[in-house]
Image (tube, rainbow, N blue to C red; front, side, top):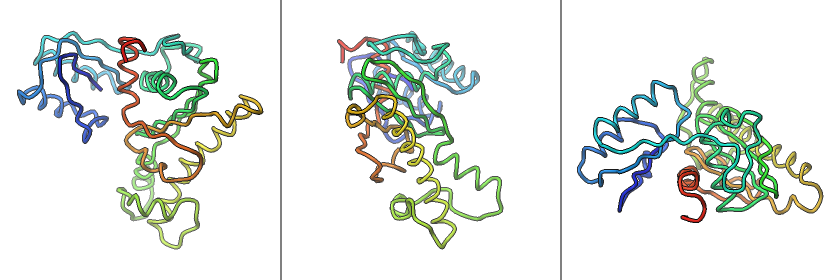
Length: 246
């Protein structure tokens, strides 16, 4: 993920989060983007992928690349990991943005290749989280490891109809199973967090959903969900400039 520090910049909302270096190269070579002075970078991809991204930026701009990593504390939020930098930077940035922009106590669910759940209490203490395969990872695992034939590009309307209900057709049963598993993980995590907070506080939990696969659960009535597709980008700005510049 990157952000060009210049007078004007645009976010390609159709491809952000896909991590395609070619898309960034094309944008920089198009002449439509103001040359950046600084690039904010955060990634949990392989070292090879990060190197390819840095090389693409270095070869086309004179911008300074600032790599954002997880910290022990920022914006009044304390990282709950014993080794703070071992928390994925994407999770940390989403936590910061969720707390600053949406409030605490907070649960953030980021649905991508993996689905992550993180909790922040009313004092700004990150209590840790859970990680499970994301919706598409679940579908691809079934497609790659079974002889069952089905579409790996689910129909959003079909998912809405199949959530939590027994099905009599394989495609519907798989799609319903995936979204029910994702939503069930959120429900279980919220139940645990409510117990941690104690009586009288659970009703105040803000639940923010982000990530490219967030649409899989947004129509489900587990609880009141706030969709913030730019959550990690907001976190990048917070990590760079602090809350006073937002």
